[in-house]
Amino acid sequence: MLVNMNQLLLVAKKNHFAVGAYNVSNSELLKASLEQCEADNAPGIIAVHPTELAYAKDDFFAYVLQRIKNSKVPFALHLDHGDTITNVARAIHDGFSSVMIDGSLKPWKENIAITKKTVDMCHLVGVTVEGELGTIGQTGNHIKEHLQNGIYARPEDAKKFVEETGVDTLAVGIGTAHGIYPSDVKPKIRIDILEEILKVVHIPLVLHGGSSNPDDQIAEAVKTGIAKVNISSDYKFAFFKQARKVLAEDDGWDPNNLFPSCIEAAKKIVHHKNELFNAVNKAELYKDIEPWRAQYL
Image (cartoon, rainbow, N blue to C red; front, side):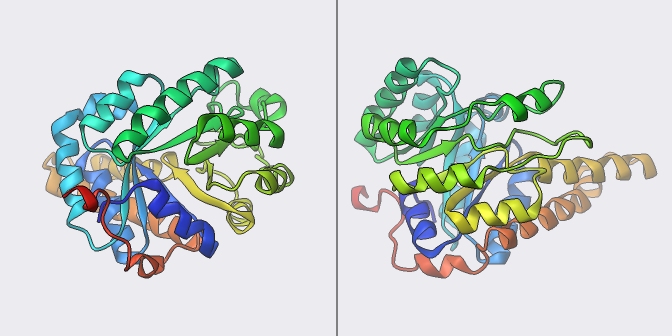
């Protein structure tokens, strides 16, 4: 069942669990994330970065959309880290039910302006919008500097940002980074900042950079009030680690020989995340929710 982010996350926020957002760019990753959420009876988010959308092409996401609509489990199809109005328009054209516009690296006024413009456009057709405050950053050579000196979201800014833009959900910088952390880096999610933001912001909050963080910190963030956690690197890492193993042991190249065990490896991670987010069997809470845009059909 296709739903938008309000339909998905307002239930999660009310019932104290989080929904996993799993990035996909091919049918194998889609199979791993979507089928495992179905097996867990857990709501899910199929997330697509603009580079993934450019790689997989519009026709692939027509298939993704149809697969989601045929599922008994609620899913949102979400543009992750859209950085231009053009990317947002393309996602709307492709039938996405939710988009993110990421202006977090822009000056305050520019972030407000592009986010509000996105909200005004998307709300005309019932598409929900996620904005971002603070910096999430990337892993790699600058990860230590980012975690030590990153720009954390301030509660007063978060409140003003929501009021001025009208976003439906908000990603907040509270100490995470994208990707897999180097072995000598110990991330620390700032629960104290999250608690202060929750006092003044009443829309669902999003944690980006959910991969490679300690389970206890993620669980605490969800318990405190995070309603959506983005996962990409963790389950892709498991997928491609298994792919390398299969290729090293077998010189075959047929997809039906290579990918099944890779999909299973990725599914194990998705299942673990769904358990961590307290999302298993929470699809039951959506029985009375109509599919997105049902009112227009």
